[in-house]
Length: 147
Image (tube, rainbow, N blue to C red; front, side, top):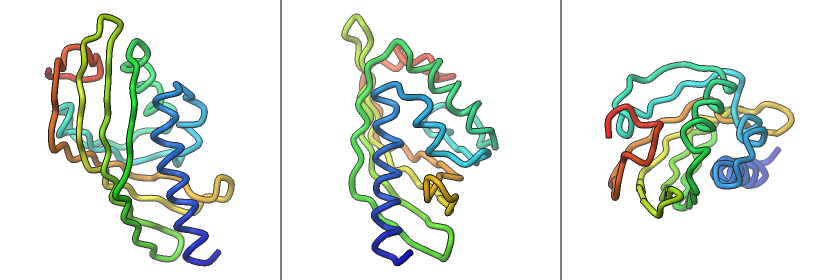
C-alpha cells in the first residue's frame, strides 16, 4: 500500500473503534484490536497499565457501558507511519448518559499503536488514554475504580 491508502485505512480504524462503542457493536470493536494489546487507562480509572486479550478488553467495556448511552467524537488525528506499524494521536470527546439523565464526559487524547494485520488491514495494538477534562457524575460509569 502507499502512504495515502494506509492513512485512509487508519482513519477508518479510528472511526470504527469509536463508533463501535456507541452502537454497542462489540464484535466490530474486537475486530479493531490485535489479539493482545497494551492498555493504559490510569488517568481515567486509576488502574495500572496492563496487557490483555482483545476479548477481555471488549468484555470490560461491554460490562461498564451496557447501561449507558455514549457518543465518542474523534478528531485531530495525527498519524506517523513506520513500515508495518503506525503511531496515532487522536483527540476524543466521550459523552456518557445514564437512563436517569446523569452525565459523565471525558475529553482526552488517545495515543494508539497499530500494525498491519491483513483483514482488516490495520488493527490497534496499544491504547493509552490521557485525560484532559472529566466533567459530570463519575458514579454513573461502573468501569471506574475510583469516582
